[in-house]
Length: 333
Image 1 (tube, helix red, strand yellow):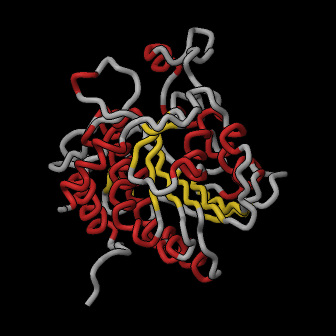
Image 2 (cartoon, one colour):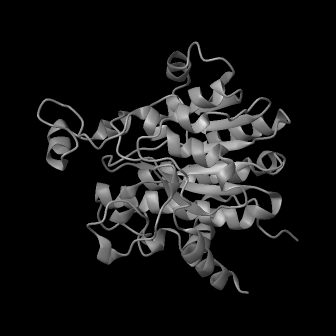
């Protein structure tokens, strides 16, 4: 069976609710009940802000040792003060040299990684360029995590069953990959840029799962849900009121989750035995999401087929490897 036909079968047969027994309001503590991570190591980018903080706390409470790579390490240490079993290290996802330095330092320690959660992100930011002129949301949310996971691959493969979780979003519906202009060189639109980056996060999980499954490394993409966190820092109050996210008094809409509820799906994907033998899936509300087409634009939830398409995933992997110069799976002579 060709990879394309395998991917089509996977998307149609596995991209469906299990069902898990959990839901939109499930908390991190509820997902982690009965999960023992003693002796396990997790790496959580952005693990000191918003849902990342709750993710780190829940993993540590279950016995894991958690490494939190942080752009602002002092702020990370302050946010995580009092949480046992957590180390903070410096990492800038928009800087390939910083990524290499962190990964090299980690690999030199000889430790294996059991869980990698790519939680760090920026959203709807003003136009900014990083590295060799890359659009910042695509670079930070996707390319930086792509390079990090590839550089950490020896530690992931050594884990004997590691899981990688890429934080995507329902925002992926705003844009597929813009193959003709991924860096918005012909005009910038902040929400389209965010949408492309979140589609990229999902496709990254699809391809990493395909490449890594032979080493028992499985990958998942996650929509954590609507949550008020520092992720909204680039939006004005007027914008958020206009979107219906908050009311005039600043209160979040009723459907929004708490940060602890928002962390639950990432933790479920990272630890749940219900997902043993599965991977390459887009998940939400602590379950596998359903496929939805463009015709279902009014339907809440679900994942667009282009965000889990295996051909798109392979193409994005090749583009990302070319841009970053990093590919743990490249054929070597």
